[in-house]
Every structure is written in C-alpha cells, then in structure tokens.
Amino acid sequence: GLPDDDDEASRNLEHEFAHGLEGTGVRPGLLALAMGDRATVRLNRACSLSIRYGMPLLVEIAAWEDAEAVTAAWRQAIASLDAAHPPRLILAGPAGPPDVETVAEANRAGAFVTVRTPGPGHPQTETALARHLVEPAHEGFDQSVLVTMDLVMPRVPVAAPAEPRSPYLIDRFALALMEAGASALGVRRIMIENPARALTILPPVS
Image (cartoon, rainbow, N blue to C red):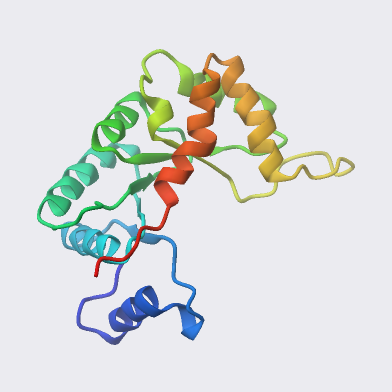
C-alpha cells in the first residue's frame, strides 16, 4: 500500500513521480495499490496521485468478489476530484479468470480486469480460458480485459526450446480467442487497444 501522507517515504515517492527515479528524469508509469487496512483512504489518495501525475492506477485485490466494492469506492473518490482525465483503473485479481459479474462491473465503470494466461506449454488451459472469456454471458469482455501472463517458467519438456512470450500472446492466445468465437476486432481490442488505453501516461495536472 501507499505510505502515509506525512512521512519521508511518501515525500520521496511523490518526488519520484514528479521528477523521475533517482534523478534520471524517468518517471514511473504505473501506480499500484494493494487493498488492505484503511482501504478507502488509500484508494482516495491513490486516485488523487493518479490524476495529478497522469499515471494509470492498478489495484490488487485478493478475490474477484472484491471488485464491486473497489469500483464503487473508486467512483466515489474520483467524483470528488477535479480532473479533465480521470485515472484509468486496472483491477488485478487472483490467478483464476474473473467471473461474468466482475467483467460486467468493470465494463460499467470503464475499468479493466487482468486475465492471466497460463503461458506456453499449456495448450488445453489456454483453450479453456479463451472459451471462458468468449462465452455469451461475457458481453463487453473485449472492452475490459487486459491479458497478462504467469511469470513462472512454462512446463515444457526440457528438450524443447522455451517459447518467447510475446509471440505466444500474439500468435497462440489470439488464435485461441478467435477459435473460441471472438471476432478479429475483439481480439484487436484485447491485444492492442486495451493496453494502449489502460497504460498510456497522460500529462501531469499542472
């Protein structure tokens, strides 16, 4: 979570947001928040910082069932802040895919949910995940999904070369989505347009 407002760690953090990491001029591109104690206070402050410095806001939740409470608190927080560009909210949940209600709630709130693919070496799992996302009840899923990948090494035979991860997402998982019934435009939104909308850094508020 974010440090408290009045301590040195908080001041150092905001200095990096404004001036860059260790004097390099390279500013952070994402503000992350793990929900826990004082959740509403922390979320309010995270929204304020996200607006002030133009960064997307990623909120880590323990269970997808927590998504509705977070989006409700987020809406309330940004309603009290004056900004031409409200923060982009990304909900990062557990390893399993979000349920239909979570995707619908994210879509209504203009937020994104992360969907973690199994990575190379799990063809059956990637097919099942693609079918889950494209099922008819997941209307609007392509507007809200951000695809990510497990950071663990794929379970492939030792003799087989490891498959690069970016080509896997573009070639294999995109194809699995289309085979499950996603349109080419839907796949483009998931693979290109959603990351561009979610992760773009906006000019800081002056």
